[in-house]
Length: 426
Ligand code: SF4
Image (cartoon, rainbow, N blue to C red; front, side):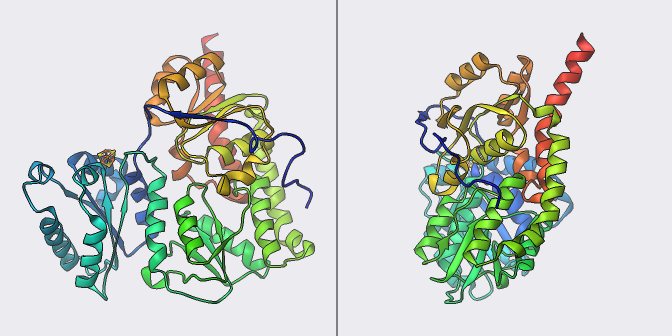
């Protein structure tokens, strides 16, 4: 290894955290359904919510109108919200209708929303009742995607965490990769680890319910996303053990993530180098090309995707950027601590949001690039600031070596576009 896992001197892990609890501008956890339904091919996500929730899903996943959808909304009408109807009975009828029409569904997620939380509809009880009714063909689980006190990536965390208690038990020593990545990226990770002789490798979530991994005291797991805190806690409760590492963004992050797993499985340096040298070199070249426009540029992360700290590590250490503020909705040092160890103290580290105060800081710093939610990007662009939508980072393949250049490119494109606009205006 020629890379440090901890840098000398003060790092962001030790830096004071600016905690803010004010108005926030983020999507809700229902958004996760858009990528989860593609991954779990015999699952259905039934949002128990309002017409607003239905509209959010339909507009965010408009392409799905061409396919038999794997999500839908059981709309709570005004009568339900006023407590005038038995929402449980209606939900049961809705589920019966859905499952009789769609025998391909093997896992049904009842997804809570703001309205179902406000009327305190007990979806856990509903899921238990419906599991008994529809066993053994369908497993019914529930989680909340409500926008109250959550951010959009927490939908995936809540979904995976809901699955952990019902995973079968095993005493086998297995590696579990946790997080929903595009298949092609997941295959790359599994391929690299398999070439090192590591296995068996399981993935949560699996494509189909019959392939869901088992878990137990000899399971070691590595998270693929930094927003899976509740899932990690649920796996810990099942006796599994987490491998801590920086997240696999960029050449360095990927190498350190792989190295941590390789160490756990006793892979020697020669084997590690044989498997990783070529893709590492490709990643370095791709990043160097894509990051030319980023060298020396400043970046401000508003809290949105929970990917902010690992991405700040990648952009400052591999792309030559300077972070002004790194905001993250929640900072879970058990997950992002290894990334924080690699960022020298200096940038403001903030947790949560008070959007007006944070916008004042953005305007004062006038960074070269601001990573933020969709709702904030247009007003900031109108003020002459360059922005990047955080949500694109979860819809685009960005993990591991082969995507490292694309990841840098996601940030360099808006910077280059702004420079071209300036040149044209001059
Ligand atoms: Fe809106 Fe809440 Fe429904 Fe999300 S869950 S679409 S925030 S009402």
